[in-house]
Image 1 (cartoon, rainbow, N blue to C red):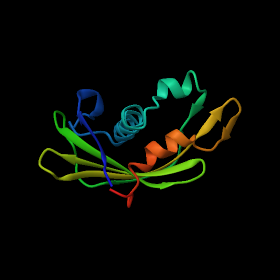
Image 2 (cartoon, one colour):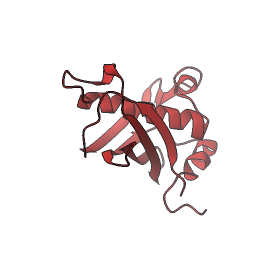
Image 3 (cartoon, rainbow, N blue to C red):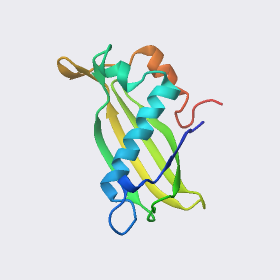
Length: 141
């Protein structure tokens, strides 16, 4: 089961006056990791989804555990794995670690594929499902 890897740096815009990541900014990072995953690993960018294809993948649920603070200038390594693929939904687990290997955050998310006109769930297209299956836990190596 390969994990999708992404790295970002904690910037001033992410921090509160104490110089640590203000927790809502982690949700922006989670979204950036998911958006990058869809573009780079699945081959379906959010720009194409929302523009040409008129679909989206809003979060139905995000459970988050904050393990340790991240500070301005820290680099965070993210891993993303698919834990379940439903008819129109998808469960993911994301882990963020610091350069020292310390756990910073774990998030479990459920996304739902929806058409934008009208806003209604729809099944994953087969090519997308196959791409997602490559990152599914317990997938054949």
